Each structure stands twice: as structure tokens, then as C-alpha cells.
Image 1 (cartoon, rainbow, N blue to C red):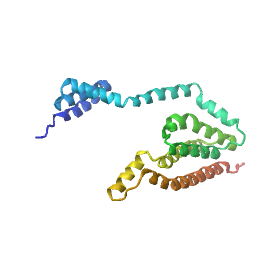
Image 2: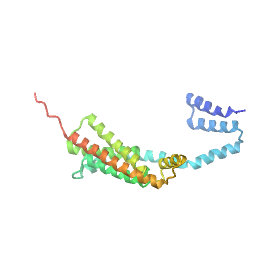
Image 3: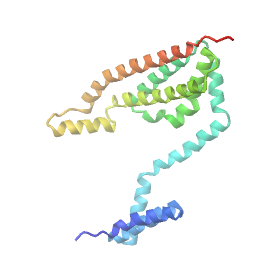
Image 4: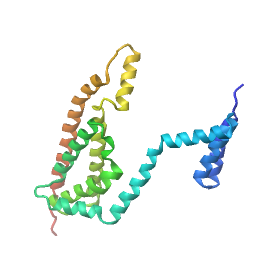
Length: 228
């Protein structure tokens, strides 16, 4: 006979959140209740909680990094990034984002996929620098154009990571593809799959790089002023 009592932990979470109790307390109570109702003793439940915390302790690093980035932004990180790019001769939004695309793809291909990202790189550094380069090259921009520059910055990070990480043979997606092929009788090594990801990454770089340069040129085409 199936024991449905351990599912009471779900009800505890729902009720606790609905009543706006402390989330950490609700989760701990639900976990303890699930373990006890599942037949474990108190010591076994505490051991399971301790092991889960120890195995996933690296997740807490995120909560340290994000406040640091916020503190840097509060003290002028974006303004410093804009000032730096304004002092670089010949810097344009298109060239800057193409270089970042190359950097993102190469580092992701080497397994360093977390070296960039929207919260830690795009928002505080890449987007302000791209916006400053666009202002330097094309003058004042409308609000819609500024948002497009920010969107292109975020898209560049996405494209670089997505098509670069598959070149790294130890990434989860490569291992998943290998498992699917092997289940159908096609034994392939992760390295073989990674090699075939290189042409796709090159095409992605050329296509998105062309889009970035075309968008930069588009910003440079200003509508003629209409004089009364």
C-alpha cells in the first residue's frame, strides 16, 4: 500500500507561504515532517538535511556575489565603464559587442561559462559600455534605441554562451546528446560531438556579429531634420 503521508510536506509549504510565515522556517518544517512521515527517525532526517546543505553549499556563493555587484554599481561602476569606453579611440558599439561575443564564445568553449552573464557582466559593464560607445559614435539616442542597445548586449551574451559551451566536451548538453545516441546504438565520444559543434559556433559568430555591425550602422542613419 502506498504511503501518501510524506506528501503532507507539500501542504505545509503551501499553507506556510499563504500565511506569510518565514520561508526558511516553513521549508525546514516541511522537510522534517516529510522525513518523519516517510519513516525516518529524527537523527536520519537531520543527517539528510546536513548532507544536502553540504553538497550544495556552493549555491550560497551567489548570495555573496550579487550584493557585491550591487554595491559596485551603487558606487559608480556603470559610470566608470562608460567613461573608460568614451576614452577609447575608434570604439563603436558594434565592434565592442563583437569582441565580447568572441570572448564569451572562447571562454565558454574552455568550460568557463560562468565568467560572464547578465547580472554580473552585461548589466554593470557590457551594456553601459555599449551604450556609451553608441552615444560617442552617433550622438544622442532615443529611449527606444537605448533599450535596443541593452537588448543587443544581453543577446550577445546569450548567443556567445549558447553556441560556445557545446564545444566544451564536459558540458551537460554534450553528455545528454551522447547518451541519446548511445541508446540508439551510435557510440560516440563527447570529444567527437564537441568537434561538430565548432562549425555551428563559427556560423553563430558570423551571423550575430553581422547583426551587431548592421545595427550599429542603422543607429548611424539619422532621419533628416524637418524645418518649419
